[in-house]
Image (cartoon, rainbow, N blue to C red; front, side, top):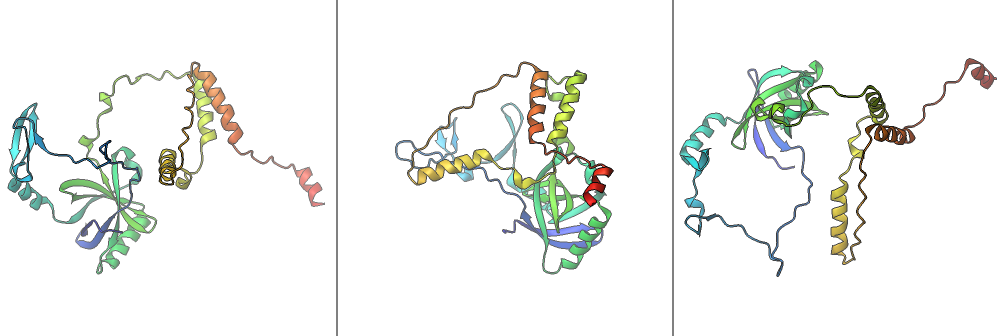
Amino acid sequence: MHTMWKGSISFGLVNIPIKMFTATENKDLKFRYLHKVCHTPLKYQKVCPTCEKEVSENEIVRGYEYETGRFIILDEKEIDALKSEIDNRSIEILDFVNLSEIDPIYFDKSYYLSPQDNGSKAYTLLRQAMNDTGKIAIAKMTIRNKQTLAALRVYQNVLVLETIFYPDEVRSINQIPGLPEKDLANEKELDIAKKLIENLTAPFEPEKYKDDYREALLKIIEQKIQGKEIEVAPEAPQRNVIDLMEALQASLKETKKKTPKTKTKTSKKEKQTTAI
């Protein structure tokens, strides 16, 4: 696993040297754009529409658009000076909180942390202390030129760092149009909806979920590699749900078929007969 960052966890006066690894990976299939005539991959050029010419790297500066069409130009030296002030290669723990206090909307990306050569003892100490107290840490760090908040927690036997959004990076729900403000649910419909949720409730087993679209794409790609003819499946007919109650009852009936039957209780008399 490739080390993407090295630094330390600052825990009071204790420094724990660590290495950081990306914990997740995006398995979306990536396609390249090709020229239809010769199948050559296309290149993208940076062109100035005013000067009508291609621009080289040394002619490019960074600008912040504070009004439409108006920019403040930032010098690379100014940006680098700011980077040097905040990039201290440290994950500074600010507070310890309960995981249940953080809404999942704040979570962004996950990273595994492992100790460097001389940090095993302090790493183990922090991991055990967090396990025993059931707390997670809120920390601040700089990664990829951005100062970010992070949640540090124990996952199985490893410390995991989850980057989290700042509160002002989470959009207000007041910006969402058309949200119903009042509780307009019909009591009977609500009762069936609750029963439907109960029937669909199961332990979380992540291994049972799969990306059907990606698997279908891989199958097509493999068939094409082998020179096989592709059979296109007919489009599934769309069902228009007109009556909400009818749809709920049909869904409930369908889930009852899939729900395993509970064993009936044996009476005392039957138990005695069985024992004889």
